[in-house]
Image (cartoon, rainbow, N blue to C red; front, top):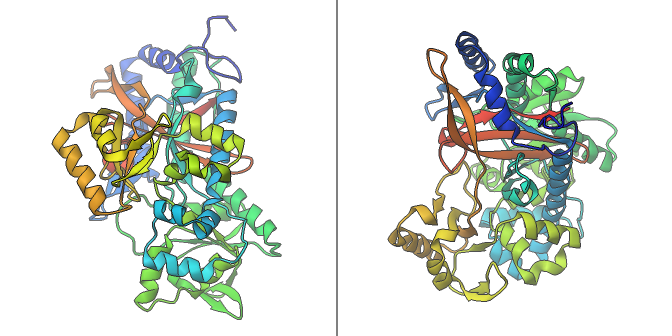
Length: 476
């Protein structure tokens, strides 16, 4: 391979490979580009790459033609970093149970506290997750490690499990062959399938519990409206691998003589899509959730109780010096290099991004353009305010709202999101480049890494905010 080629086998990418791929697409004829674009749109919609609006009507989710590509060293680093963060998250439940200061930073509802008080076993240390880390990085940059920033962890209800392999398959089928006709040594393969990540997590937990059978329930309400529908696809996929698996509504599970059952089927382990706050509300209305409570109490549920800490304020725990003793040196290194400084909005003193003691609100007003205001537990990109893009008055109102509603809002240091050019094809097949903000969603298990790619013309990147999907492939 020529020394100037960006197609380096294995490790880090030498140059901006995205620029090279755009250039390859510019060499494809207009007729072929138009045909590729139409094929990607058609197959994406036919295979369910859609987002359901509130009226439950499917809206096609755009699939960008150019994939993002990472090298082997980059994949390894992202996997190791996400696993390190996962290990740190696994300590949060015990920390919350033991530390009033942690409970202040990670506020829970009365329902959540009641269920945790009932279900948490003394001295429990084995917490597991199937979730998604949202992060940004620039694979083509010489400083890509430094550019890698994590924004949050979604330890429950992480979307993308069916989307990722389907988008990868569509792009590998329709786009990559056209690229390889002009660059035969461009050899790309998908990263891991998130459903195999989930299967590994479930299997590891079943082995840890010494289960003699492996019947799996994927628990999600069947009357949901809106969002992305993935559970039926995931049930079919796991069944295709020979796994006894059912998509169940949590209210369809029942407990009989210490065994979970769904209809006539015994259930051994459950993947849950819902927070206990939501489940407890259903219980208060008269629904029987005893089987799911049994699963949570006995380590038969993924994610475990530690999955309740979906708070963005977790990063305050990770970036405050007074909590440092609870975490390993490697965990603290990851916090320092890859997490934004975060604090709950409140009137008081704390440590600033540089470690100095600060009065939080006056300091925030003076550094508005360096900060983001976020709802502590919302999802879908809702409610995020970039200090540099709102007025001083709007920022002040956001601070006042945060003080008035303790624990509901956080201040977070602004981290730039990777901006990349992607090809856009018009009706005649003409190619133009448009700048998109891009983020990654990382699903990890001990051995696997799956990656959801998303892009948007807006700085808040989310499919629910009318963003698009990007295939993230590995360079062989």
